[in-house]
Image (cartoon, rainbow, N blue to C red; front, side, top):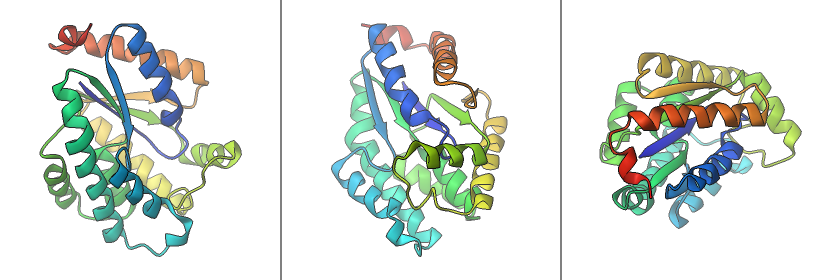
Length: 214
């Protein structure tokens, strides 16, 4: 089962995923966590270029193909082998991030991006995509306050972040059978509980969930 997590900067998905993975493991599941861009040696090298504040002049088209190259490597090297072994994969961003950031954010053609995504992933689709929904101004405020990594994408203009957040909400509304929306403005514990309740509900509905349980 492939579960992907999406949302604007500062939405909290990166801190929630490890806790969610540990809970699933305690329930008897074999879980793999990974992220985009990155998740492989090659992908991590791509990530360092994409996130560097020294690369603010990067063209959206160049950004697009770098994300796609990292994704293609991640799918081939990590995600597909893990799924074939019966693991649950929790991925911090996946193909919908391209539509949100390069599509809605930068204004690149969505239909073209979808076909490139399909090529890079071999048509792999998440079983569930969780949108950690948060006002982008709140999210960027969190990023500034937490004192962690401040990267090239964080530093984009607020209008860009608003377009990204709006794009995510639009995609979730258009495909409710795959997407689930979590209010990420709440406390860490409240969001974590909502995520556990969501997975308990959705995994029951997935035909092969029982087979994944050890």
